[in-house]
Image 1 (cartoon, rainbow, N blue to C red):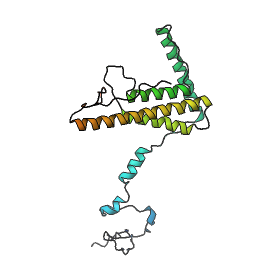
Image 2: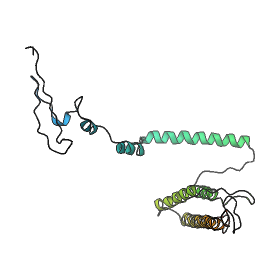
Image 3: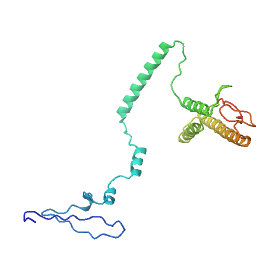
Image 4: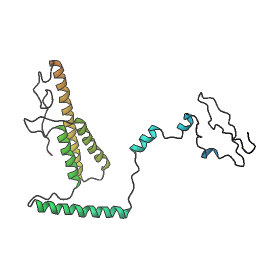
Length: 223
């Protein structure tokens, strides 16, 4: 080896071998330079994949980061400015709609009752209870369950902050929708049993549009 070249020793800083045995650390020597602290060392090129893997995010960490994105928090000034601009734009849209459709009723501002009624109507449609007579019923049980659960969350989060009328509306809506959900699931289960017993769909039970046999108790629910 030429005299002007200096020898470098690379140490393995892993604490354990792949088989679980401990490793004896060898001090890394570099001329005229002290070794870096342990906390600031990174895996050297060519190090075993097991050592480099510890420095990379795991798939679970990446999934958690995707599920919980960091939402920027606006300042009070930005929030007020966006609300003002939004309100002005909404009012211009209302003026345009009234000019385009003279005599059309003005719905007015959104309030708590309208939010609940909107979710109620959504669940009714998902349960197929607004299907006109003679038309095929389309039922989205998972969607209806999601909407009903949303109403349940709203009830819990607003508890103690509702007027007696709003509390009564929430309780009535949830009761009616939950009972309708139970009736629909029972009707579908009975239809499946009747179809299995008869050997084909619809045998032995009056047909329900969109569902193989089994009439649905009740009908559309009104508030």
